[in-house]
Length: 225
Image (cartoon, rainbow, N blue to C red; front, side, top):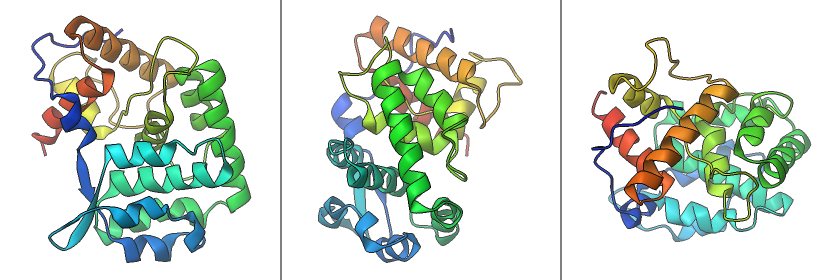
């Protein structure tokens, strides 16, 4: 288990849910297989300057429909939008998911991974996305976002999903809580399980929710960019 520092500066949960990212609707619509993949909830996001912004709370509301094929498509797109920003190159990179896999293949693998999450727990769902249910060009930094937003109190196992990306990984390394060779991407299932255990242990000791710990790690990692 990864042991996180007790003095980690944790945000309140409302701030976590309110973390909002700008997005370019037109660029995303053009990148999707068809317009039906676009969650209409994103059209109600507030405009801040040039761009609308989507927060975690909105993506969670979209994830409530995850029991349907359309709902899983919308969750995938919403998680990608929230995690990407407005840069054309970043959107293009994420859109390779739809270029290199047919819709039916994405649907099948998303469905199987979400089923693993519900029935066997977070680590098994991570393994599925990383192995037999892998969607080309959907790496762990983004499929852990899908799992995070799909997570609720009905999941099997002791842990709720938590996002792990290169920013969080950098924070873990800089705090000396992982070995020097800990990767910034491409984590094994065992490494993700260690991270889950450490985040949940810290959250329990501090009396907060796991995503507050993840958000604190992300904030620390961003300071290094």
